[in-house]
Image (cartoon, rainbow, N blue to C red; front, side, top):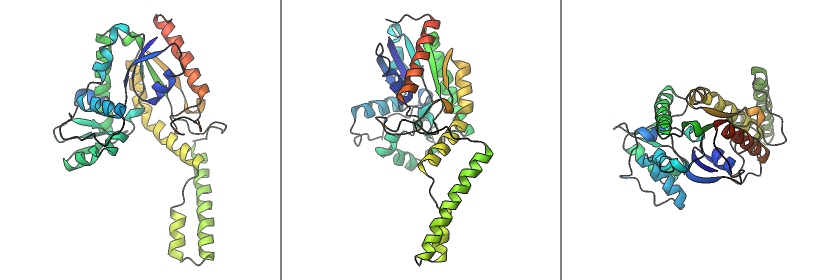
Length: 293
């Protein structure tokens, strides 16, 4: 089975659990906004990126060639996987209306500093402006896939961020549960402030520690997942309305893999989660009429 991916590690990691799969095109580190208004490579120095893969992905983003890299393999493809995780960091909008995805690599190589100097604005994920530009870019992506005869082979991986590590229960995110997490955080801060006063720290310093108490790892994951999943809702709904097939998992269905090869993150899942997603992909492929070896 030959696969193309426009998305992130969610799709790429899933493909690794498909022994019959060959990923022939992987478009990563790119917002769909770059398909319509790529900034170009002029003035962007990528020499600080050590990885050839990173340079290739960022260059593709800057040139807006993501969909072209998929379409050149159109005749051989069995499946196109899409996911939305790479949208999470937003994009830079330059005064000439061109755009550049705000990937980690863009930060690492200094291109974000260049963008600021040139008067670019960071359009943050979840804002109305970001959603409007994303919607236009995603519609363009789907239209290009349709024109190439790939729409029926396209599957959206609509996987919410996990709010808990493997072995832990899914956090309750209703108002009472959030209030409880806030209260426990306040209690930890009060204990820290009390210890500070006992050790001779001033009142203002102790008060500052009360205000800046850090969340536990479990609280951080729960808060990050809750926020991200809320911001993704309208993106997911729009993407589902434009794609023929979707594989959906709620946050409560998945867990963070503490031993994931890329480290624990709310979008790095357990092996069992990937295996479940793979089974759903195979079912969709069979329903769509594509042949698998």
